[in-house]
Length: 307
Image 1 (cartoon, rainbow, N blue to C red):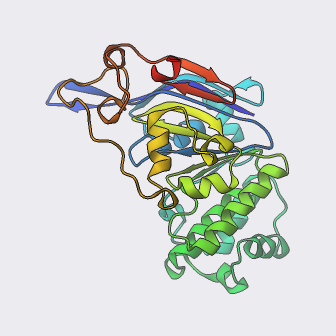
Image 2 (cartoon, rainbow, N blue to C red; image 1 turned 180 degrees about the vertical axis):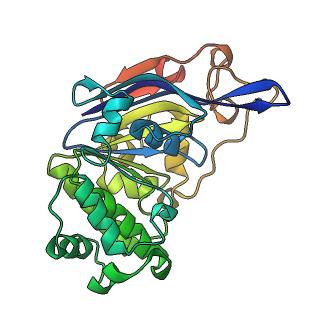
């Protein structure tokens, strides 16, 4: 359904009176999600997860420049095609609830999204969508400032899922939700995948992702470093040392902190995990790690090539 290959995102900004500075934020992101599949993109804050979502939808700031290849449903995804498909076949659940219009009720905003997607809007449709997210009928008449954080998050998700888009990109859709409502929201996204939709969920909650995802993609310092079946993470055998440290940091695995930096004196131009890696080698400093395929795992790491 969607393929992203070698995505790079650079931002330009003024530097002094006449100069300009270019900052590379994403530098080699790969992602693939098929119809009927739930893919979780995980990583710590600052890894570039939200930028990936915005790049897919084509809603990056004006000073951003992207490179890479996007393919949606077998055809290149350029800006004109993004505009035609956005909100119809491709939908986004934004991270911040401030995306909700403060001047319109929750029900009206869900109706707007349905209408933009070409659906016939009536009270029954809106009521059904609110009921799916365990939102009371009275919530339809509330403005965003009258909603609790969890309610606003669910309304925001409903504005995306009501479109019945073929590809849904959800950016931290469970932030601020209690465990019961979080599981409900993830279960509904899982249900969409089971019905043939392609679902990408961006999250820092690896534990929750492992309960519903088919595959997990790990981002580190603006780069995809591993993509594996969820069974690999459940069994505790991720191939990349950073992926292993993320799993080891889960409460069920003892909150084991990542290893201390092994060499903070020489910056890496090849691997963003160098200074926190317990298996780093000299090649990790200057030689970009290649993709290595191991059964159901693709990993970008020199260590994965060692016997």
